[in-house]
Length: 441
Image (cartoon, rainbow, N blue to C red; front, side, top):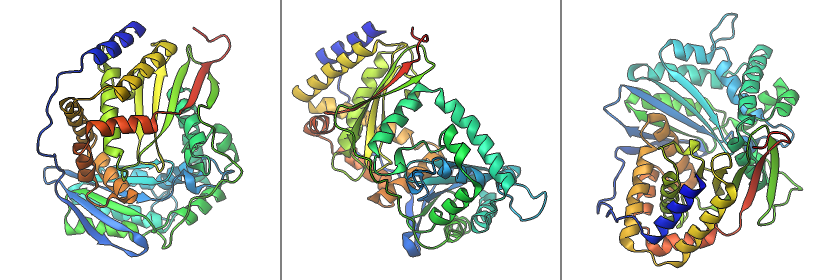
């Protein structure tokens, strides 16, 4: 595999792929609207999709990991898990919110990250408003009883154990913990096994009261944007308490010096190496160029594999997290498939060549088209599209954020790609996930 990677990098440097000129028309996402603006800065967005038989509402709440105190690891994920398991009525035998939604043919998913919670409800067009009313009722009348707490803890323990065995997840968590040094934003959203031993039911209730608020929240309706469904999205926002929460600052921690290495050990056969770099957020003038550079690097990595794999399964790849502020990009190498030292040398060669060689505009046009296509593909499903509209709006791009991203890609020039390469891919934080003694290949 390492010979294949070297050959791909050398061939790519010696002969740039044939240019495919991007379309002169920037692709556009249509039917985007700002439906309403409420107090506390809450907003409702919509994107009509007349062809779909189901619709969804993404509720964006600033209830991410950065709202939890340093001694409360995992409470953000636990609170979201408890919300799904709460009864819809305060009476014995009442179904949980999750079961009530599923019984009507819908689905409800909670996704916690460093700085937010996405609560996504999807249902048949005619049922969305009724199911949203159930969610709004539980948000306004939460039940933090002991049974709900124990069930959520049990569920999270299983998920945390599974994640701990994944070296890529481990390496990313190590970098994020160091990168977001002044808050808990880099902590695992679900916490650790040790965290879950310490959390009390009262911690989850206190976290809910503090962070599940209307300030800075938004709701995006996708699919059938009927008046009833718009009203349902508004009711979800109004079910949150007024006011806003703030990230909890962590004092006494200092940022790591450039070129710092972090090491962890797992029961794996070979090392994983991850290099983390700062990266531009969507509002930056560098954002479009970073997406184009990401497309270039992803193509080089995919050529190193004999099969077409999703990025998360490739032995070498790139993950660009631009939904957090500050953003970051992580390059990873699976040492069980590719010799990590060969891979890192090849990538250094690639970086130097991209930074010093003159890049032809037709060559960059090829990767602009690829970057646009990849971005549009990432919006193919309703939940992905709704979450992206919410996230970009809350990062300052407004209701038309999807099209702003496409416009930023289209505006990229060769010099922009080289500037971004020099500005961001200089000093890295390295995470090494190493085999325990006796586990080495």
